[in-house]
Length: 263
Image (tube, rainbow, N blue to C red; front, side):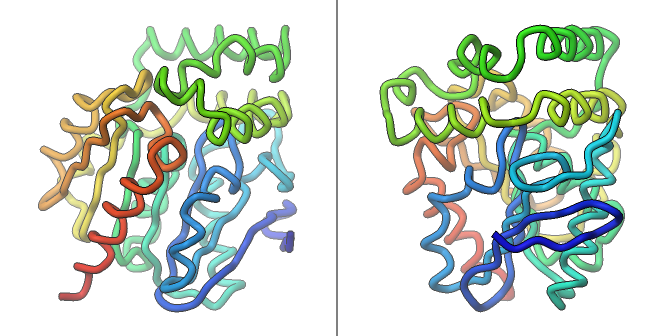
């Protein structure tokens, strides 16, 4: 897997296919492999799939990794790949990074795709829960955390699907605890984008699994109501990772949206 040294960090990435570029931003605690089921899109589009700072084969995490740092890394990566403008697609934490990328570089975003994410910042209660999670991961590590919590990330039907469960377990358990903790510290301090949603001026697709434990459809519907012209697709039978759990339906929604751009 190729990598570049960007902002004093090794950032690994895949760059496949040709055509209009799409940047896929993974969630936590995953890496670029969570988008493997979207690889067929490379027949028509150029797919750029980074491992975010601290995840997968990338390095660069410190005590705290802020989401806008990850957005800056993506901007530097696009510069290095001579990509001026792209569709930006992010899931969960990746959706929050996508919103920071749009905030910082709106002219570089052709369209937004945000899946199973939340534009809101932390409340005192959710902040404390994240601090408790940091302590838990520090105590038991990512493998035990994965064993105990993977069921929260996918719908019950997906737990029995080895094609979904096995790669998901490998990604989660393989994430370095130090990097996961650094990202959680950054997410605890993340920006609240709610008020800025009304200023999004590019085509936007929102996608959510109907059985999402972390960001249920009502959360995404609240985002849809605030983003001018946004479309929301709710996918039955999927949890927090519809791109992995129901890839055919997810890809169809994405391709329909992409096919309408520029018309």
